Image 1 (cartoon, rainbow, N blue to C red):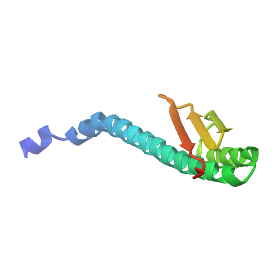
Image 2 (spheres, helix red, strand yellow):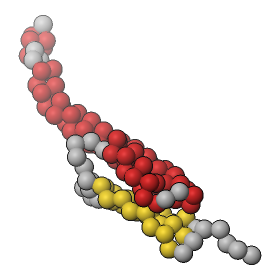
Image 3 (cartoon, rainbow, N blue to C red):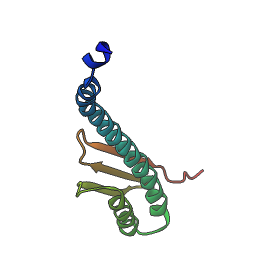
Length: 114
């Protein structure tokens, strides 16, 4: 009985010490998961915009890409999106202001003539 009385409240102390650590670990994990989701979403949609640019106006494909990316970004995170054509090749770049910044660049080669 004396042993139980000596440890009364130890659970509260342990919970008070570990709860902030669990919150920090959970927050970091959630932010990393969100960053990864944004990366793969942006990468996929940039590829789709480059394919769209082969048959449509680049400005309309770029605007559609901007609309899609803005739906995923939270709290006014700035993004810079550019799609350009050089010869038969289409180049696209997305820069998103995370810490550290997230940058994706892709080039879609045009068809080669034989």
